[in-house]
Length: 357
Image (cartoon, rainbow, N blue to C red):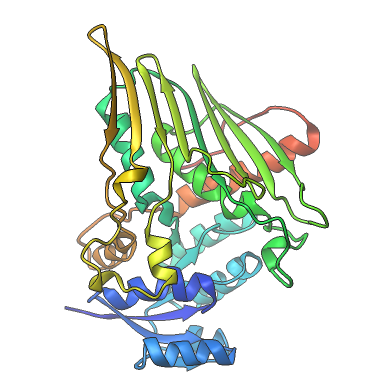
């Protein structure tokens, strides 16, 4: 079996938590080169992936003829420039979400990849989370009837700022709407397709904060309201998903367990119960069926973050269709752009003709 050599640019949280373990676990991939500039990163790379070559610059990966795939796990502001350079060097490219900062940048990369016949995808890994996969299962069952309201949120509690964190600086592409909201928008588009309109409320709420740290993005569909929210001052748990239909509702607390395992250094291939949620955070389905009130917990689907790279390998081998297409990730960026415009202008904006996937 062919093994594709992967160059991973970025070995902070994004690189060493969300990418390196899944790359190393896939038999069709070789974690070949990794940018590791800080001493702690270099030490971690040597301990966890002793065969990988540590380098100090992105160019050392992009210009290496042995590299087949470039993975970008960097700050959002350099996604476009590094992806463009990698495509121009003839590499397949995988970009951490959000894809780019602007739709114009996304469109240029899509056209460049198409022109060169290269694979381009975006790591919208929340599609593989246990909670979202369970939501998909519930909606597919039809037991809620026609869905009228869908609420999804990423709420956290951190009432202080992290010194030097680029996500918390007042920069293009920073803020939790680009970070966490991108996940929620992508999931909503997968479930319901293109909405008719968008309205957003984007605020800076914490003392001394500069970047958006509280958002609500409302996507309008015929007879369906989709509300996507996130904040940094939720001291008590809130429902990750609350879905209401003509026959009942589904409410789900708790989060996919994969991130905690990855942060603890657990390898997917070494953990038999990978992606399995504890029973206590199973979602509650409450419906009216045949005149009877029924309330039951829904067994959660397993999280399968490894499926992202499995699909990349299968696509490159000509055995599967690309699961996360760049056009889909581009549409997420367009909605984020319009969300910012909506808040600035205090009005609902039409999405007619804005999305392409």
